[in-house]
Image 1: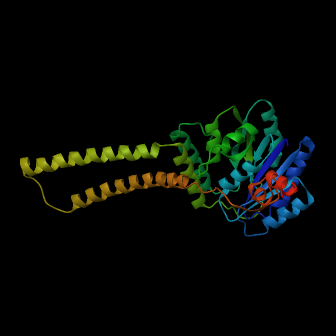
Image 2: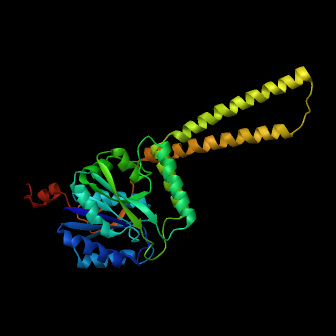
Length: 331
């Protein structure tokens, strides 16, 4: 297989037919052996039924149906795990990322690069608040991490089989795939494009999901928040020490002091706020450590038409069982 196209879907019934048509129209002239892998991440509409209809007509269409919604990054991970192409494209189903860019990405890969990601020049159809928060997040992440994570990029990219195999060795529960790919290294480059407006339907990326993704990216690739909590602790301790010296000076030297609750309440609230922030930051890291220690599977497959998937392997007899069944009985 030359190319696998990994497509996570969540309530994308209005876009699947158009996406399939555009992808086929782009890839057929490239004369590649390719497959589409649709990952249904707990959709509540007819997305899975539409993909199954496509699979019945086109053997190159594969699908993975999760037992529930596990999240976008986990869906991409499942597609990468079960892909077999020498190169793998990751693309969303909302058609904001143009399939017509894939030949350019693939051409760059043939020049010796291991990763070619798509970098947004502009973002159409998105609110000013979303653009501002996204811009702030990418630049904040770039400034506090010890690896170079490209700004203004999503998961739309092409990677080689070498990178896919490296990703399989990174089993953390809180996935931030674009950060993991940057951490892996190898030769990486980009192509710029103008991101289109969503073709149809509503986005599944709510602000709460975006905040979770941001936390996964920051806690997975930076310990700056922990250091900030430590530094703020030292700073508050220094301020408290100065206030203590002033209090002792006013009490025993000048005698100019007025007992009251204002300064006491300000001190308590200030110290309590810093402590709660520090505990919250530490708690975020502890929660992620706990999730990895439990070692639960990243996802559960309810149904798939991929022969080599774990779900199908569990139902199929092993070679040893088949040999035993074929052997003559012992007397």
